[in-house]
View 1: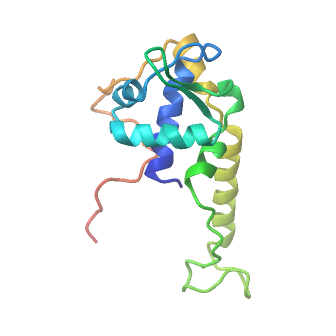
View 2: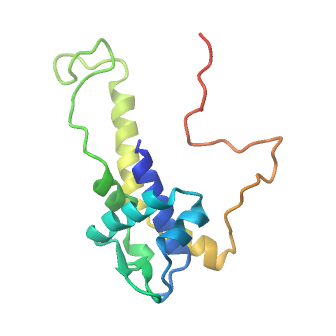
Length: 165
């Protein structure tokens, strides 16, 4: 649904949301990268783009760093998505490579439209406030070890390996 750049930008912003206190606390790109297990150069580049998109404020110097440009309640995933993703305007149909809109819709048309609409709602309605609440009010901290390794939680990610045909 979105690429690695967007995923990593969301991770960086989620860390800034966790420490949100009106913008007083600032974190360096290194602190954010290390906390999220992300490549430091990539996070520095992402923060520059997020700053240009008015989602974060950066300040140089010893007391510098990055903070959200406004409350996490006011920053949506859609705003991040728009910075890093291009809108796919193609009308290619997965059913025979035709173009949707010409003739009868393919067997998957309605489900694909429903999925796309659901994803757009998710982006528009999801704010970074959930990360602030989780960290500050519920005491959640990122963990590197799963609680129940014998029963891994279902992931939203695609499987890393393909099954043989």
